[in-house]
Image (cartoon, rainbow, N blue to C red; front, side):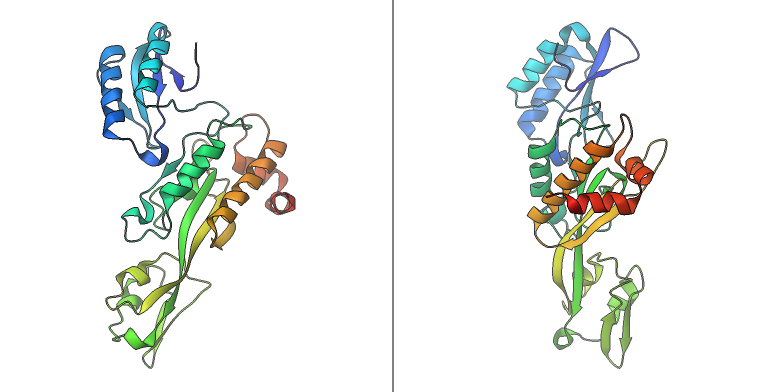
Length: 278
């Protein structure tokens, strides 16, 4: 029997089917297929997971292969479990969110194409979030890609309303004699000033990706470590993800999350190993 996406349940004869929704997206046709399978093989309902996933509970193990075949025919793929790269999550990004600094959907699709269901020492969860609002919880995933913006002030369009000073969530924008500046070291690159400035005096000088690694929740929570910041080329960010996974596969112990591997061997050594990857 196929095992990808099949999850054990409390009742030994039953299982749940975990489905693959890359970036949290499903077409209406896929949803209709899921509904039909849930009604025929499950309990007539679906469960929405905390990671944008869809699960059909209460499926008899004896019916799992037939249910999966019907899902596949309707264009629905199975998710992953165990020591593998799980389904890639993403917020809407700049497809419609005004704060989104990057194309989260394109990055999620590429990560899915290259890494989904690949073996790893333990489960690897990835998330792509459009900005430091961190709606997708990129900091709390093993691999997180976060859109970031470096703002610049243009005097010509400024009307000295001081809205930016008021709205900056970390208080790094200041004004002296009608000239505005921001503390680059304290700035969290969140795009609030560039989005909410009423005259567009604050503009994004650079938009890029912050790459984080080692985040996890669960029993031993840990926030992700910044591996690179303001990476302008998405391909460079994706290449860094490959290097991080290569080092994790070499150094990680079975059932050891990536962040705990990083802490065990030391952040400096982990970063050195990543930098040394070709």
